Length: 159
Image (cartoon, rainbow, N blue to C red; front, side, top):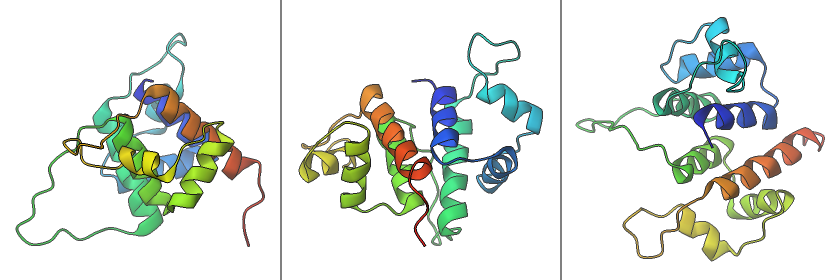
């Protein structure tokens, strides 16, 4: 999946409008104009399409975390190094932003028509050099975002 596709799917799943998207980008340290956002959300074959880089998608996901959980102050002497944006990292950032617990993640995946065990799920969130690390494929991320859309759009919000 392309970063543009992931951005569109997250926008749809969480029912985000243009002003909300622009604010999330701003909180992630990325300035995006409304016209630029519209071009990022277009499909590849549409006129005006602009490719979304991993850096831009990463800034959006970081802004989403800041919006949902607040800004984390860096510890003294700690340098933030850019993270390679893999499907695993994308899923991790969405999980962090929405503060999803293991059972909620499994429920979302079930809505996306994927059933896995909790140990299989935890393998996606391990460090890459861990022996039980599992690569998150495009189809798995697609199913996760599909389940997220079903959970957030088709169920009334909890009160």
